[in-house]
Image (cartoon, rainbow, N blue to C red; front, side, top):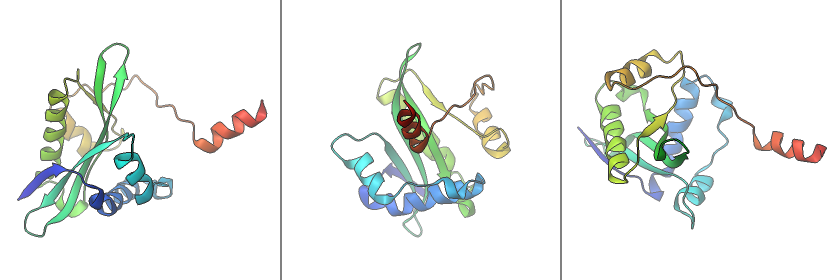
Length: 160
């Protein structure tokens, strides 16, 4: 039904559409500032900072899902994969593509000798939480996400 493969540069327009669909689902459609050009540079330039797998629907050869990840370093655990996003288009959810993508990313974790995989899930996203709980994932609510955007950082340094 689906083929999971490594993402290619020519997949990026469809992957960005999936990211935008996820942003709508997460009630933050205006937060996406990423572009295909940025993704080309960041994923396929001289210093790639992310990788991805895609789920292709065999019947239509259409990309219907993606797993976007990168390596991070934990001072406690060492090298780990950080799963930035796991996205399956709404019409294909519940048909197994998400499991195939997640499993492939877990396999990559082992292939690359990582100590584990880390990711986040919104506390109101019950379907995703249920999905991760089936794997026995540790859902740690004790951490608070912290972010500063580029404009905020620039403003901080202009004040000094």
